[in-house]
Figure (tube, rainbow, N blue to C red):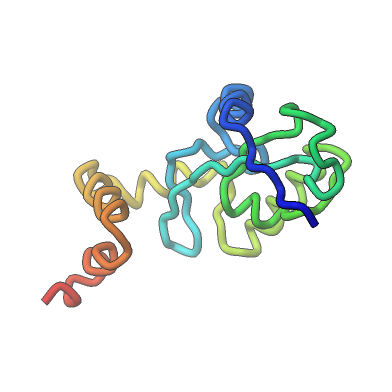
Length: 144
């Protein structure tokens, strides 16, 4: 099997504009936080092929490039769907089973979990610094 070429940045940028900075499947804004089993998770974009590359190769061009958050992309994998709505239904069902809150509740739950802006900014900074510092923030006893 030949190596698959990476997705061009301009195609990912077009998808981001087309999707208005949201995951195609769950609708969460990239850069927001969602709740999974009580733990906040950052929504990060991943460029992916709606019709899996294994089926279409490069024949569909940049219109086949979409952005999905990591959980949705991992759930979809190389599955083939007739329409975005079918993919969305399948993925949202699996997200709930994996402990992700429904999109309609995500923003409210995360905002309540991070009522003070200072705490949210501190968490974001520690996540950027690495998992070891994040663990110390969650469990202060580890810092001693």
